[in-house]
Image (tube, rainbow, N blue to C red):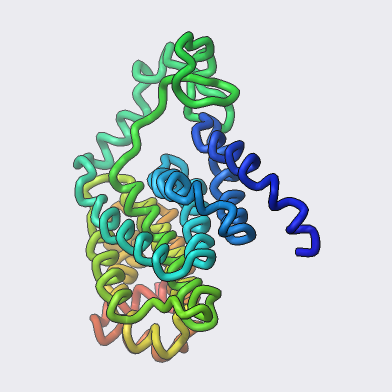
Length: 315
């Protein structure tokens, strides 16, 4: 902080360098650019304001990136922007969530068997384009004469298309940031930017409904993201508020994921494990007895699924 004034004159130049990094083919570069720009706007909000429109476009674009950590860090940067610019930025971010959250419903249908066939198809991977480490770009894609395209170690023109479910996945991280920053003692909440139940309840209800989509195999990845982020949201909201307003929304979906092995639903072990961790953390927050009682109120099998996940049920 004592040296901030000495760096301030160079912020516009440094920011332009960071904005170029958003176009890099190497995802670790884009990842760090998101976080660095978020740090910049918090430290130098007025110096960054002339480029705020461009920054917002870059962050929301990265929120739908093919790499999960880029999506997460774009959400963190947008949270930093809310802290820096207050209610107007909160309103814009909220609109992004409302627009992108239902996107998974538009994901093309695909069975798990078809997905596995494509992954294991030797012909599909033989003599295919090689990719550089940390990049979705071709290794040998250098030398574009027009200078267009992304910059970086590869400078290639070939990338995997973004998928609709990834936009929903990015919104899960963004809702987490809203809960952390704009409730309780969050930095934005202390400045008067508050996430009310009237706003949050419809969002989480929609999120639970969208996460019931199972017509594509990557839905397991989306479920895993939800189960990893939900305890963070719950702790930010606080025990009483979460237990009273939001816990019931996710119980049925959570129990179904916990019971996937027994029911034969075909859910991945990744999502089953994430569901188990989520159930344990939520139970610690609201109390194991209360949590299990809420599950049994939804159905006796749900209490059994929880017991098995905690290693307490009979085989």
